Image 1: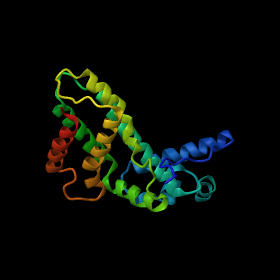
Image 2: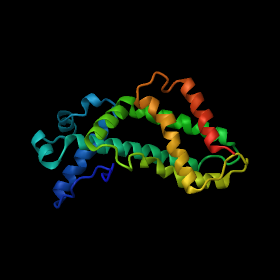
Image 3: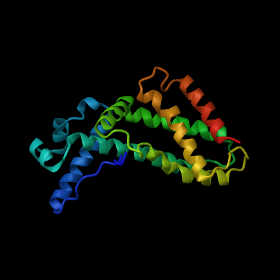
Image 4: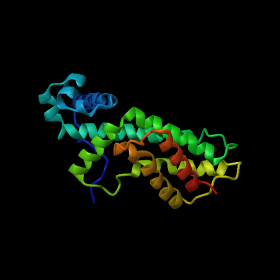
Length: 207
């Protein structure tokens, strides 16, 4: 697939048009934070943004793309926060404690986004765009911070990885943490899901 996952919009020439787009995108982001795909509609966006349906139609190529953009931005923010937390992890604690903290933070983030939003994005975006090669690139932001964390480890429990090894490992972590939520599996977010996740991810990252 040559298509890219990132949704973008044409750059407005006039300052007023730029402000209009920024307001619309901000409104879409706030709507997505409600974690209810049933309100991911043009009417909800019009009410939230204060612009008419006509203005939205003229300014945007697709109302659905605005919500795709907002979901992507929220996901990027979650993974950036996760990456930032790696630098704060105590290097005197073993890899098991790191994995526990990562799983807990990931579950909390997914809980805020909502499994319904994840399913909305998976179903609607892939139906419209197929599955682009960069679909799971959002996890890459954690690779360099994780390598730095490994270099600070004082417990000798973290396995040092090349960038490629870390890339493969964290791509493998995604299905463990996210897919049960996205697929609506009953195990999603349970203590059993947490236990299995911690056990499997520790095996990937530990010496």
